[in-house]
Length: 491
View 1 (cartoon, rainbow, N blue to C red):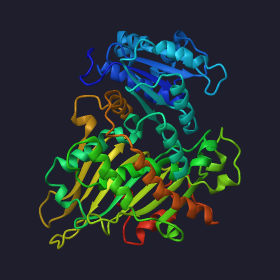
View 2 (tube, helix red, strand yellow; view 1 turned 90 degrees about the horizontal axis):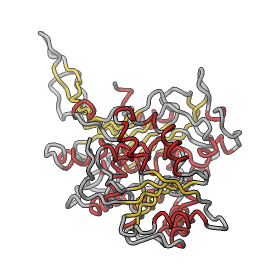
View 3 (cartoon, rainbow, N blue to C red; view 1 turned 135 degrees about the vertical axis):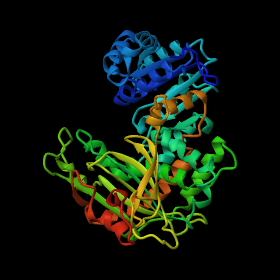
View 4 (cartoon, rainbow, N blue to C red; view 1 turned 90 degrees about the vertical axis):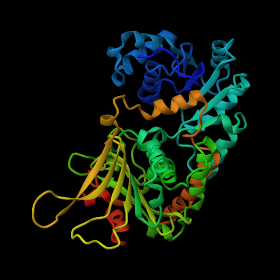
């Protein structure tokens, strides 16, 4: 274990709004512990949780000690765990409260450390982003070395996203705003750029001449128990496509940037979003599919999930599954469909990008199939290149598709860090490359909003699919109309 800080990471005060919530306990604090254990936090860096809990520092440390242990290997390094707990502080605050005592307490805790970086992490609902930022400014806590991290979802449509961006942008410069998408912290996502731009054999065939289509899937086995109140207002399109899947699409389709530069990469991602062919009106019926899972066996349907608020008439129109055929109108990708798919209560948990190459122009062997590149983000991160090989044996040549596989967990001896570890390290270092810029977020909403409008105007309900299956029949027809199939159907 290293006890020194990594060069480029300054001493910081990391203030987490919603610091006692589920995201903090399951993701942020475990990630920060691993950063500490790996020497990526300077010795004087502090973590300050803000909540309405009325906790003392000792109370908060006890809560973390009890709840976060399940997510980190505490027993491997007891002294390191105690050191991490010593970094933790708690300040109670009520946003919009009359006395403002919480902000005074935070100001007192930060006083005398104006030379440090200040990172304000808003692990709270989007409606609080503007008020939090205004309160920070009113308390005089925003310095030139401050940054603010915004968790998704950033609004529920383009106007609400613009409003949030305006409110936060009135307090922080764009260079200080880090809009986080944890998918971009995954090793496979970062390796996608390396795979494309550091290997000579791939980039020449990364275009419509050689690629038939691309599939991007984020499938979950879980449903929405206890979360229907949230999901009724989100749905799969807002919850997963607008951010996660479109981010993966941009990294897959972007042009090579002129340099490995934070803004050059983000410039190319925005160009992809701006080149997406709009889907509006009746075209939504041709290029999109909505589904909602129903009960099957021991698995409840969306409307029957336990612990959730009672379903409303609007609940019946909420999509828990969506599939989209997207097209990018530029020279590289003309004619290549990008199929996006996400769903709850699927038979497997899997996030992956599948690049399906075209068949060889003329095959002299019977039984061959096109090559395929699979980049898996979860459950086990890795890369597979599926090629055709001769099956051993005498007699006729028999072809068999075989994978050339790279598993990050098996290939590299070091522990593969969680996405939030990488992203928090980048925030502390002031590196925004893996975070979304304002124009990027708004370009994504400009493409999503017409689909939402078309769905609202359509009286049809989402197509039902039994829980534990791969989605509604319409999703398979979306590819089947052009003689294609989803990846798992060809395995």
